[in-house]
Image (tube, rainbow, N blue to C red; front, side, top):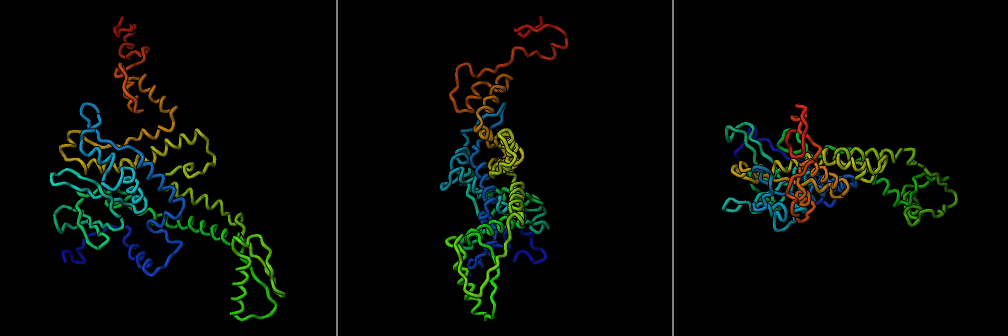
Length: 414
């Protein structure tokens, strides 16, 4: 054994504690409605909606390769371009690949993709890995080398282990306290998710019972335990369930039923449920209108919330992916040549043509973009004369205004 117990490197895996327990539960055929570990958390509606929104928001954004040499341009000739934009591997489209990674990142706190490399050194594809089967080892005592080193151990379904170096793996993290591994958001939000799950189970059980409440049956006399159980079973069969909702129940002589009512209004059920949803959406950076909470919303506020979702939530996520991709996918020489990848977040504005065309108008009038550049964003063909920069004729350089001289159309002082 290479490492002794006192010298064993730190292992970072946020889901390791629950993997064995979950396997044991499944092996014995036991289930727990309140088990929200791992992908079981998707059974809670709010968690599912939040992760669905985040994964689809990332997946629908086109990712492109650029080269920044005397001005940014698309590097469509780079061999990585079709891998990222169309097909990262033979089994997945680009949108499925990015959605898969984002779902795992939001469930487990970490998402991994193995980088397949050809003998020539070029990259051949990217394959997502199961986050629950990955462990991170950190040699923070310098046992192997004088420098701190990090490597990954992946265990496949057959139990075979693979050592993967950082350069061979794309690692996208969530919120992290050490920068090496992301925190598990499901475990961090366990109590809040359990509250939402309990509310859903309570409402679902109430519907299945025909919204009947519990109660007490009074009987003048004495019954043994077997008789009590038989009467309880027969009475629940007669009165409970959707098919028996609002039906008249018959009781034998000497029996009296007294319901025990717990009104949802008394328990502030709706208020507590709404508060739980707000906590979960805030934790994932989702705006209320995105989960159909239209309280105090209007078109103007919704439009502003969409921009806030991009700037407050999505922009940070895109930065996580772009920085990891730029460092792992390009050689040092390519980085020096200005190659980098970037998600095109401008497609978020496609759903609002009024704001989109206003943005184009301002860009052209201010000389920031040419008309053909704006047409390219709409995937329209370029037009003759559209490669010129235009500006407002009323604009005058401040250097001329300071002199007090007039400014004629030709650009010379009068």
